[in-house]
Length: 178
Image (cartoon, rainbow, N blue to C red; front, side, top):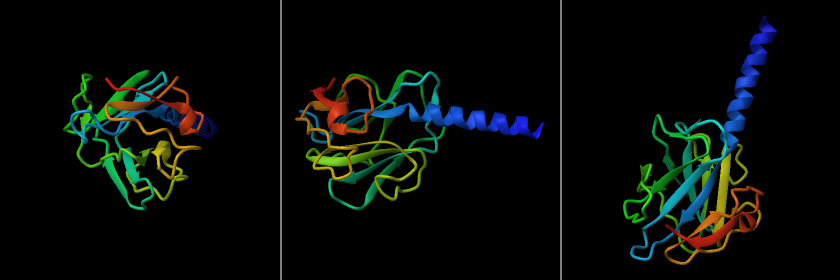
């Protein structure tokens, strides 16, 4: 009987870990055409089950800085299966509705490092075990592989085919934002 309980716990933990790994940073806009603070971060859940984000955080480090700015997800936040979750600043002017408006993280146009973290503790570095996904762009010094290109105002960097090869320059393409 004990073995069965351990097996069930292992299965639930494995399923949760697999579901969490399906959530990635899908797209970011670092500046809009009308306002330099017109920014967004879009997450994508490529999995078949919803993933609760309460207890998770977004964390940002400037291109070569050492301090971290973070925004915790609110209790009850869930990203749907095969769905998106849009985090914006109050200056956001895009057409998709925001799932979360925040004023803590401001993305630098010329480069930075953004982390999706499975807890709300400040990360210890780009290899922290709680990092679910991260992107470095431009002069960002903590990219997965090579940093993604810098988008112009009103453009974004987006996963080209929703893949995650752990190389930001390969995974992300520049596109016109909404």
